[in-house]
Picture 1: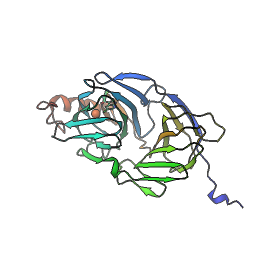
Picture 2: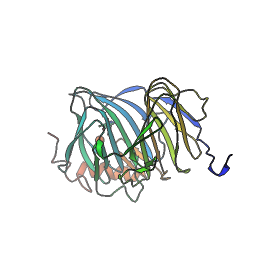
Picture 3: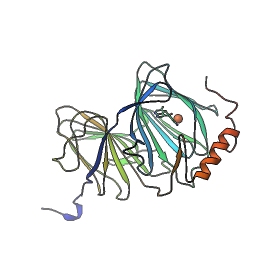
Picture 4: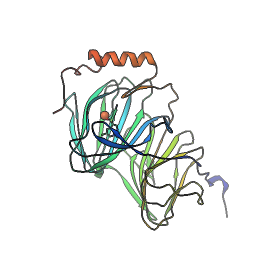
Length: 291
Ligand code: FJE
Ligand code: FE
């Protein structure tokens, strides 16, 4: 028996790009999955970096305005200090969801010998760009997880397998961390109007889209086209791990100048002045540096 009303149309893979190593910050190394020339911007996502950093390298004092940074540590720890006295360390499995809003100046520095993770930049709509900065910090034990038929999911944002994250996403966003045992397969629903991509962390078996597609190896970004959701199989004899990230497009003009992301060049010029003259959210710019 078949019921066409529940038939799912998996989204096709429209792009598959290797994120090559590049230098960033002060001696850190990143694989830039989104925010590179082949994949400049996938509304609302401005950047995804898989970072690897060892002391004394790091991301010393720098500003942000107009978007959110989501840091997910996979190995080691990252200590964050900002110009308003907010300070903390997140370790493997923990997440910091930081809404920079009108302005943050901070440092992000490694704790251990090897520190790896993901940092996602989510754009904010014009009405949220100048909001007060906000932090949502989740320890690994606060991140809900579910397991079924060889598929394990950690729900960093959004919903999967009937479990929900408590993270509040001003820009509606889904951020899921999947591990599939050999032979496992899964379908994840995604709202039809959202943009979606996956980034492969481990294993040679990640097959997205129709089951006879070629696998996406580690460090590849897979961009999905239109459809209901995504289908994935692990066609290898080892575990496969990937993150699935999706979000509602904002549909506004984007003008980016490094760590400032606004809607127009005039707003970027104002932001550079605000930062320079330490005003409109950057009041502490001239009176602070991290320890
Ligand atoms: C930044 C260069 C940078 N990817 N991944 C320019 F490196 C950064 C920056 C980061 C960053 C930080 C962490 Cl913890 C992890 C990252 C880039 O801080 F913001 C600008 N503007
Ligand atoms: Fe930063």
